[in-house]
Amino acid sequence: MDATTIIIIVLLVTITLWWVLKPLWTETVSVNSLDSQHNITELFYQRDTIYKTIKALDLDFESNKVSEDNHRKIRLKLMHRAAHVLQKIDNISQQTDHALETKIDTLLKRFPKTKSANDRTLLKMVRGELEHVVTSPTQLASTSKKTKTDSRFCTKCGHATDVNDVFCAKCGTRLKSTTKP
Image 1 (tube, rainbow, N blue to C red):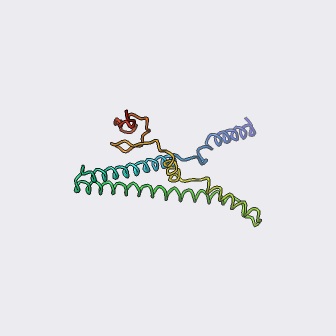
Image 2: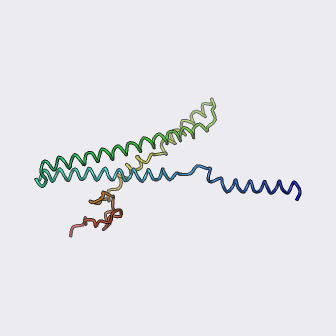
Image 3: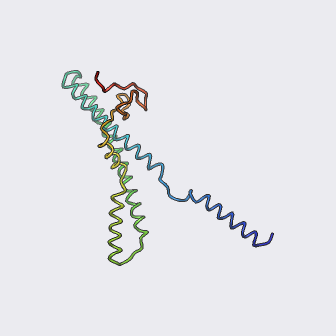
């Protein structure tokens, strides 16, 4: 083998390795982002379940089904649990918002620095569109919560279930029927 053949082989191997390994170096949608969206949706469902449980407890207390002492203890536990869930929602929201702002700034820094009025206007429009299009998981979860009225929650674990479900998908508990005969 002469030198040109060796150079061509090395070049082909290098190009092939680059082509095979390139996906490992490029940015993709992270699994953590998807997990955080799922987690925040679950947290919103937990929050709503706790609120509904507190309302039911208050109604039971008003109808004298629960003593004042038990009502106060249970309500306090539920309030602590709700505060814990809200704290988790806030933490995820702040982390996501900061990550999105950083991502937007990184994308905008890729634009060349020009002094043209048209370019500055275009840059402002792009920034506005990016901020409008990119939504955080908290915003997604809160908007999906508003449109999802056909859901209910498991009384045992608090997992969100569909109206047509007979069993909870998370814990397997038989759900109470919502249809009246």
